Structure formats: structure tokens, C-alpha cells
Length: 441
Ligand code: ASP
Image (cartoon, rainbow, N blue to C red; front, side):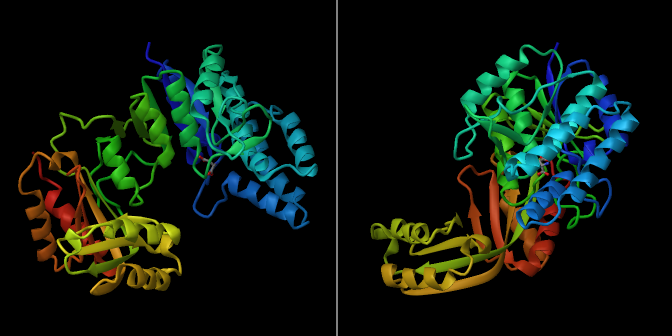
């Protein structure tokens, strides 16, 4: 039998109605033996996530404000859900321990991890699965860096003793200590991927509130088509532009173990969702897999006569950025020209300093700065084997009156990145989508 790992995100376990849905999903497939849960998320627009309330508890504590009332709001939420699920009282002793630890001044990471902990204890009782704590299994070093090999070994050893288990997402502990460490926000996705790798799952199902990825942002394109299958590489290209359904770091463990990730919708379980796989689906006849855009980049364009025959220009340019701790996104180049694309978030208020250092150290003949630039990535492994893709893309942009300020095609040939003015991003994405929506190889 194929063993599966199913991770349920915050909205899938936000209340008893959602948790009952997850049980129905789990029971539908006898391979769904290892379940990872997030803390309860928002039940409705404007609601609070338990994790956010726990962060708030800690802030109250740090400012000597009463945190107890806030904690009781959290307790009440779990108590009501436990009652509806018929597992009353299962969390009582855990609440007492947490209260006591908070009183003793426990760390932020301990406090915020309790959302997942309590949910996993409760859901394990409800399903009749074992509760397996992530502390002692998901292992970090003392700087909070995940220890992949040690985690893999600890998880596979422990889980081999449990036929079925519910495991809390988001946290683990320092190797050789009881100190709780967490991933960054949304990190339960990573826990799921690590468990999938450790038990050599046939698939890592990631249950959320959307039926997988869409070819474009539905706030920009009306009714974009769903993506049935996407390779890890394609996803990486799209997600760095902000198309985020899955935590970025969840991809690596699944990828090295060659385990497909299936994004599914808890509210519409009949939808097949998106499969993220090692290789491009050979049956897919789509040229373009997806389009993603992100605003607020700055392009610094440099011209220097005979740049291409000189030595060290790029190295010196990059070391200026490194010294000033600014990340670069792209580095399109021509014969005697070179542009560097920087995200405003990384640039902060260092633009003047970057420019003055470039002028001093590189002495360009000309330097131009374009601000308010949006980058749009059009991604698809189907592009590599097809002639005329860029012609179609740029024709569509011209017809939509979009002024393209920058072009960069990754050497993998599976993406074309263009830079346009921020206010033309929507038009550009719609134009590209329109040009490829029905295009098949
Ligand atoms: N509960 C954590 C958060 O809200 C982790 C997660 O849900 O994945 O970020």
C-alpha cells in the first residue's frame, strides 16, 4: 500500500466543521497514515489565527501587560472545538503546563509553537491516531538552522513505531536540548515535506483552501485556468515572484527524495489539485505553465565603452552590492551595457550609496536608473522546444500597448522575464495570459 503524508493548513483545521472534513478526507484513503497539522487559522475574513494570538500573548508578557485573558480566548477556542469533536478534556492538562511555562518566562518560539501542539494532540485523539511530538524529531542547530540528516534519521526511526500518527507542524527542537525552535511563518509545509521524505511517502498531499495553483493571479486575470502539473523548477521560478501557496523551503526535502507534492482543497476534495513533480509532465501540452508578477523593482542601467573586452566589471559591480548587503535579482547584459535589477525591499534606502559607489569604482560612461518597475515571469518548460514563443509574447504586449523596459531570458530557456512600469503590470499579465491561454504544443 502507498503511504501518504497529508498536511492540513490553518484554514483546514480552523474549527470543528473543518476538522470533520479533514477526517472524511483521511478516512477515504487508507494510505493517509501520517497527518501534519497547522495551528487553527482564520475561520472567516477578519478572524485571528491562533499563531498570531500566541505572538500577541508573548508581546503582552514582554510589556508586562496581562496576557492571561488573551490566553483564555485561545483556550476557549480549543475547548469549544474539542467539545464538538467529542474529545472534551483532552487538552486540559496541556493548558496548565503551557500557562505555567509562560509564567516562568518561556521563549517566543515555545509559546507560538503551542498552536500546532494543541491542535495535533486534539486531532490525534479525535482520529484515534498516535500523537507524535515534533520536538526531538525535527532538529535544529543552536542558530535555528534545520539539521536535515539528523531530522531524517530521527523521524524515520520514531515513525516506524507508529502505524498512524498526527504530528504538529511548524516547530521542532534544538538537537540535544529541549529548546523549541520554529520555522518561519507557514512552516508546517516544511514539516510535512520532511515527514514525507523520512517515511518515503508515495505522495505529499498539502491540503489547503485552494485547488492548487492557477496559471495567473485571479485578482489580475479573470478565471485563470488551474495548473494540473508543474515541475519543481517551474514552481521555483514562479514562487520567487510571489505566487505562494506553499512555503518555499518545503520543496527541497520533497525534491531530493523525488516525492510529488499534491496541493489539494479541503473544501473541494474531488478536485485533483496541482501536482508538483521532479520532471515536466510529458503528457502536458501546455506551452506556458504560469505567469507571475511582482512590483517595485529598480533597474540601474550602465553603459561603458569597451565594457565587454575589459575584465572584472561584473565582479566589481557585484561586490559593491555585496558590501552594501543588497541582493540582486537579474543581471541582463549587452555588448557594452549591463543592467542590474534590484528589489526595492532589498535596496531599502541604499540607492544613492549604490549609485555613488558604482560611479566611483566602475566609472561608467552613462548610468540610468528606472524605478517603479514590475517584473513578470512567464514560465513553462514547454517553451524550450517551441519556436515563436517570444514572438507571440512580445506581439501580445505590443498590442496591449505595454512598454517593455527590460527583457531577461533565463539560460534554462523555461522563463522569460520582462520589466514594465508598475502600473502596466496588470495589462501585461492579461496580455500574456490571453496569448497563451489556449495555446497547446
Ligand atoms: N501556524 C504557523 C503560521 O501561522 C505555521 C503554519 O501554519 O504553517 O505561520
